[in-house]
Length: 392
Image (cartoon, rainbow, N blue to C red; front, side):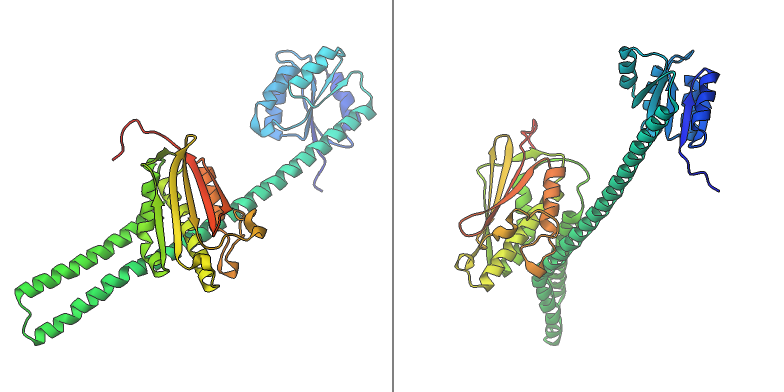
């Protein structure tokens, strides 16, 4: 049958002490023995016992030094050490605890006292290991949940990309269709000359090039930034608005960007990640305005998103406000928590959660939200950096 008893390593250079401890403990624990501090280190690394009884006065390496070395080895540093010694001075006990021990038993010891001390610290040790395992399980669970949220956020962003590409491709595709259809009419009318074909090819290639640039723009948007960078925050906002301008126009929403001067920041985060946050906030404002229009709210009759970028207290401050009617007070305090959404069944509740994670964890900034007169306002604060060299 398997021996499930805890293992106790007894370290003492006196054989009499080792034999006495064997008699006291052998019925309750699996025992190992070492006659010096050096042997104790090797045995502890090899077997990794559940508890160590350690004498202080030993040749070559005393118990204090042995305990300090044990605590310096990561894989065995949490093993509880109880000193056993004939030294009774308070200074010795203080030194024992300073070196990493959890308890101190004076020789000559009583068997009941030794067993009681060992049982107490084994229970505490096992409880600690159980709690650490629970924490590890919870951390792993949270990490998996985080990865799932990140994946869902990427899928949502990909959906927005596809929709925006479709909007930007619609006009050139219609133009391309008309040009191609005209070839048949031109042929029937005898108008297909070399000059006509040259113009036909030029027009088609121009439209195809325009569509190709659109795809490249969105590919760059989705690609995670490879390194930290110093960049113009205003420019990042303009890039997002440019890519999604057709979708906003379709919803009769205008965007106004106000900035007194170019703002440059250096962050531990990345440009494209910030642009994803901007997209999340723009989409939230768009959806709020659309919802308000469907409900006939006067404040959302003419959709407007206003972006104000300024400097203050060594920060770049970007305020994104809309006239979509504001946020319900019942969820305002929980808006950045996962799966909390203002869109009912139409929302996933991950966009703002991921935005907060990006701004705080990657950009070393902050993000907050408040209701204003006719809508909501999100405020992003990021570290402001003045580059030594002008960035082109």
